Length: 235
Image: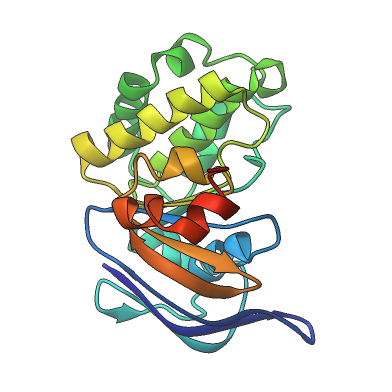
């Protein structure tokens, strides 16, 4: 579904990604793992069209999408749930979901997508008129995922969904991610520092350090890798 080849991305004169190669199979859950500053967010933003790639290619469903605008990439079926959620906190839950579907002109299709989102997150229907600032961190993360689903994506990029969440709430978010993948066959890329929990749900994962992929493998392979166990799993 998504193939990244020799990807380089810079912030001004400083290169942040140094030749990333990643392959995402259709229907998979893939982890992009590593410590803070490893390049995870930069990678997801580069895929989503929020950062300009200086070298390399991103191919999605057979189409080269390198340096397309973020709007065009959303239209092609890729949606980003950004780090920190970046919701409109002074607006209502319903208004945030409407913002997620701002490219959609068909009201019937909008209502269908809204019904689908409410079926997955009933609390968002119950709190449709509530101001987002009054929601808990877990509820806001659910809303951020729901907003992304309003674009009807085939591929969702989740950036550090654990930030600001209690472990139990993060477990609930991970259950939602698994349901999205299993029930809706949505392909998911999840960037996270919480390696231990992510390895329990992914099919494959890539570990980044200083803007490079240093190791990749299946969940089982990485869980049994001694270097990964010592550096990230505390074993």
